[in-house]
Image (cartoon, rainbow, N blue to C red; front, side):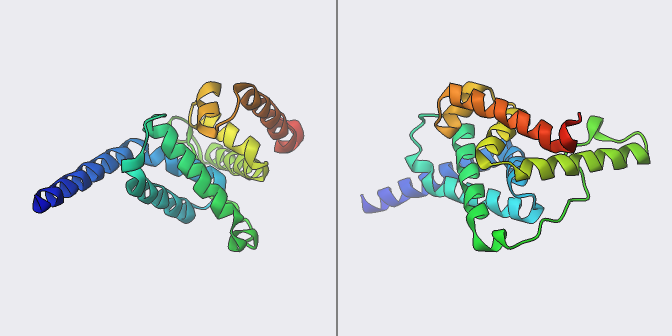
Length: 184
């Protein structure tokens, strides 16, 4: 009987690992993009996502299915990003603009000049977004980069839908005012 319990534990670990692999395939890139928008550092966002999946693996058995896995993973990612931002070492780093844009339109650029301008716009948007208060930044990232609706964001953040709408509106206004002084 004792060895039977050991086999069950091994099977549970294999199922948990298989589920983790599926979750990594399904959501890994989205979580990396989201983490990058929070921390603006490719290496650190990789570390954060790795921590997210380690946490997921450790807590898979206790997942209560009150939300879906994507919502759960996004919540973990946001928390890990906030933890990173609180670290002393992060507060003492100087932000260095990135040379690569986050997203290329249609996968490629039509000219070198257009590519350069797109990179500059992307870099500037990331700077402006990263300077926002976390309560606005997380709502904007979830809405625009994760294509989540207000109700989904409210579920992820554990907030009222009206609060999310208000933060979304205020965040848009702040972005508009900060990004080139309100220029589109």
